Length: 452
Ligand code: CA
Image (tube, rainbow, N blue to C red; front, side):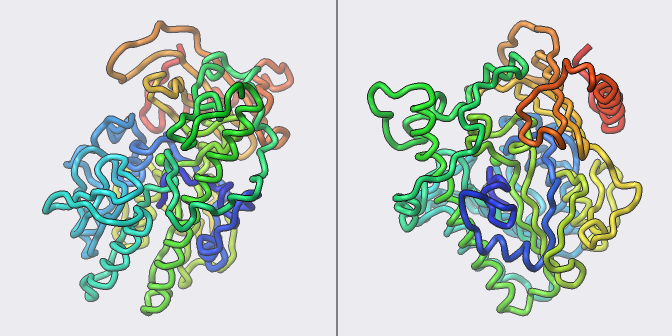
């Protein structure tokens, strides 16, 4: 898993801006999921959802500051009990110490790219080198030295390509002399969207910092000119960080393939959420728009998964844990809210498989990106989002309440989500159906509506 790696920066997903030959190997030799979504598009909560198979309101990790309760059942704990040797290496970011791992070596909080410190059960230590390379070295060392009598479960979690996008020295000049293609909506001003969305501080240029871009903007640059200039700087550093992640995937696949582990190992590549790559003029994630909501998910398991296959079922990050339990032959935990996607990955989707997904972001205007709390429903064709304009389950100052605001997008007609059609009378029936579906999903997953 990587951090903030959007699928549209992976060539197997048709990236226009980079090439990831090693990550593509998993797609070529396995399956690509085209509709895999996170249930809360931010680091800590998505990681908690992956480990527990539960939504934020169920697992208690709503925001970046919430700790994962060490007593809670998680996928590594189950696998460990089931006889697996387990390890967690890299970015953890769940405040509390990792549990359920025979070995763990994690970055403190967010960690740093150059000469990072890591924490393990014996204490803290600083290592010389580049974070992505070190996490890869540690992972391969663990694979080499593990107990070969046992099956294994390794979570290799990169910090990259998270902000502030510090590249490896060897990729410092990568893409230096090229102009990275801009997204078609880089100069969008967010007009026509919910008012609360127009306030977000994730605009390329306006909200990227000197730390992000590693230099000050030229004197007098503003507006679209500033955005154009900032886009090239941040996207190049982002893609340089991705390049090291791609190298890492290649090294780990080579290790598995050269050690007779290819046929019998399920390999997954994913990221904790997506990322805006200048889409809608934005960077970062959090919002329920496609670029942020969508997770890359590629899986290789030659025994069961057909090489080069594609799947467009609606899959969620809370499905990962039940899926791993299924593969390990450990049954299912009724407290997990996701479903095993094992048969989906084989190309045999159950007729009863879900037709919609529920999303909720909780960090209401609470940090410098100023993104409102919201929830919504996405089907294969449509998306309905409610910004309920209230701070809930959040500590600290609470802004005054305002009426809820809604957005609706027809993803077939408007895949880039450029026109909020909430007031279009021709969509009224569809919107009413989606509102009922939203209520149904909140009830099903045990979440509380906030828009009344
Ligand atoms: Ca993240």
